Amino acid sequence: MEHSTCTVSVWATVVTVLVVVVGYIIMGLFPQANITVFGTLILNEGREYIEAPRWADIMIAVSAILFLINNAMTMFKSKKITGIMGTLLGGMLFLTLMYLPGMFYTSSMVKDQYWWWWVVHLWVEGAWEVIAGAWNVSLGLTT
Image (cartoon, rainbow, N blue to C red; front, side, top):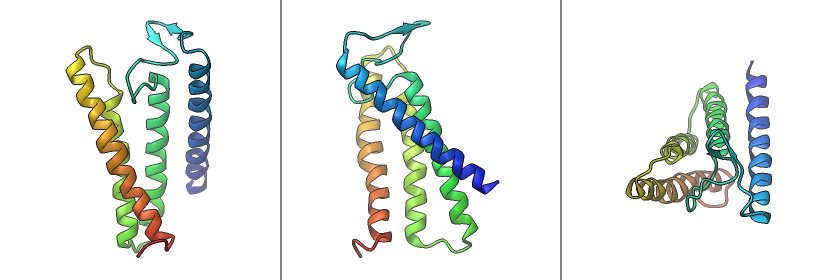
């Protein structure tokens, strides 16, 4: 069971990264070629810094949730959670939770800018820095 969860998590992340990168390359090469399917823009929603289309948002969120579950199960199985492991788990939890509010569309520019600020400043600068710090300490790069 554990091996299959790990395998699903890894492959979900790999597929997510590949599909999103290919989508962004296509969007960069053909910026005016945005495709609309059932009223949804496929390549770009037109939002600055959080312009990921709905399908990419969902793939990123599912990948982050699977990554969080996999790491949490691994940490809890070890029966001894260190401060570094707790910091890493907390950072990954907030990474997942802080990404979700930026996924939702709102017609109000004020609300859209609020969620943009939330994702850019709290998600990117907050959660990722906690994770990077925990990785640096666990690798012995800092003390």
